Length: 73
Image 1 (tube, rainbow, N blue to C red):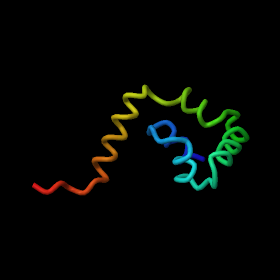
Image 2 (cartoon, rainbow, N blue to C red):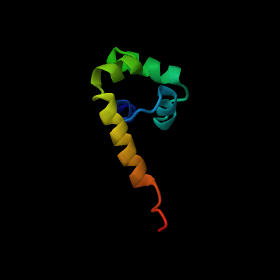
Image 3 (cartoon, rainbow, N blue to C red):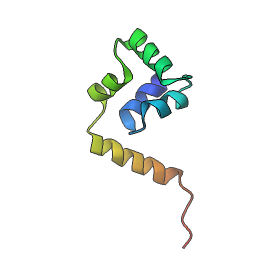
């Protein structure tokens, strides 16, 4: 649950991708777990707790650059 929460806050990844990355079998399973544990659906959680969308995209870009192999010169 904590991993899914962080991904919702810090990335622009879709709920389907986050559900798989967090070990939920389906987006619906993640939604049920969120509603049961936090009292809100993942999409609503993201709207309430995610920083500005542009900032999240910048975070994604930085993460992607860190994970990419060095470019040949």
